[in-house]
Image (tube, rainbow over all chains, first blue to last red; front, top):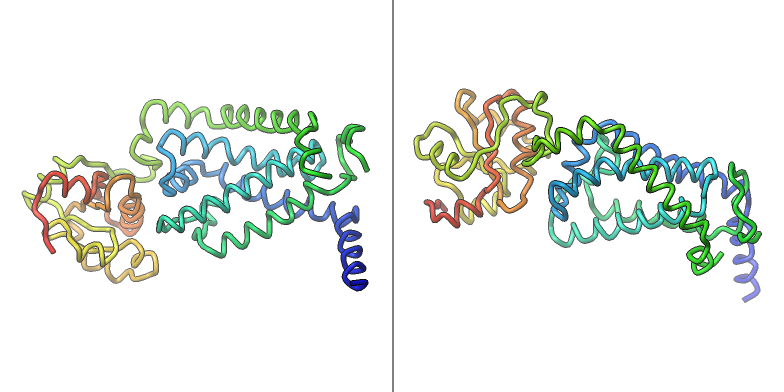
Length: 162
Length: 163
């Protein structure tokens, strides 16, 4: 009992450590920026990747392919430099949750596709991808629920308690 | 912080609106050329760059049938071996995309180099025929047609089937 409580307190301490949180922001934001840049550079390939999931038609695939990478880029960038970090973390968590559900549905439908995650550096949408995205999601959720965001360009408003 | 606090914070929603608005704005100004091409119907069938794949065209059921009936072109089936075995276009060559992708490229040597190839898959919104067509194109086959109606349309039209 006591040992469990001590361990929990230690985990909480790490999760609230300013440097740890900054590092997490760099990692999560960085991977989103990287994923976005490779897709912005080649929108047609990404559009076809989206289409291959066979969930939406040609027009929606096209719109997703040109807009989604920019959402990823700006959310990643804002998370790192600290402009609306809470909104960015919420958006990134939402996207990751969506990707996980999407890959799961695609696997259940028996469709074999490239995930389209990193543009031309693509890989297959499989169970490993779900596991990988879950790890990213956990990191994003830690950031979303972290008490304070230090080292920010725009300080969160007074309503955000420390 | 609790989720309820985050969601009831106006700043969260302001931030979301700004991120999304900025994304749409940047997407539109950076991809204006592509948007115009989409509008003109260039990507109606597939998202491929015409300059990158000259000679790769899409054909309808009627075109595919006449190419097949006259023996002018060879039909290539990009579905799995099992699906091919269950029924295919008579005389079609079985070239599953999964096998080509996993590196069995010696299969390509069995294809005639001088004949146009008509690639098809299940139909509906299947995409393996296009993926296979792109690979074939990059391997030197320059006269490639994709029959996007695929097996489904062929069956529905009551055309000959081989098992």
